[in-house]
Image 1 (tube, one colour):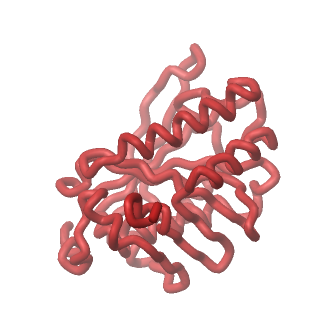
Image 2 (cartoon, rainbow, N blue to C red; image 1 turned 90 degrees about the horizontal axis):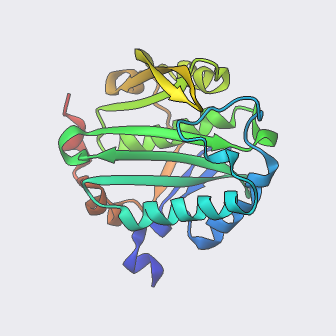
Length: 224
C-alpha cells in the first residue's frame, strides 16, 4: 500500500557493490544511528551547512527532520532524493540527487556523505556512479552538477575520476571564514563515453511524474 501512494519507496539502484534505495522510515532511523560513527575529521567541514556540528541526539533528530522535509516538499518543480546507501546490507551513507524545474532544464545536482569507516574503499565513487546512471540513462538528464571545497580531496577525487569537467570556483562563507568552492559539470556526452552496463534500476516508472520526467526516455535523451 505504501508503494501505491508513495512509489519512491520501491525505487532501488543496484550496482555490483552497493544497493541504493529511497529510504522508508526504518531506513532513515538506521541512517540516523550510524551518524555517531562520524563522517569527517572534526577539524574540517566539508558541507555548505555545518549540520554535523550538532551533538547527539540533536544530530539524529535534525537529520530525520531534514529527510522528512525533503519527502514532504517533493514536487515536479523541486525534488531531492536522499538515496540510502547499503554496503553488504549495512547502511553507510546517503547519495543525494535533486533538481529544480527538471522538465525544463534536464539538469540535476548531487551531494553525499559516507561514514568514515566506509571511506577509502571506492564506495563514494560507486554510489555517485549509481545516481549518474539514474540521471542520464533513465531520466534523460543533459548535465549533472556537483561541487566541493578545495580542502576536500576525497570528494574531488571521486568527481575527477568519474570524468567531470571543471565549471568554475567561488568563495563562500564557511563557519565564519572564507572557503573556496570548486564546481564541476558532467555532460551527457562525457557520461556516455564512460557508460556502465552493470547498474540496474527498479521501481522508477511510477515516480517519473513526481519528478517532471517522462517515460519516453529516448525522446528526453535527445536534448542537448
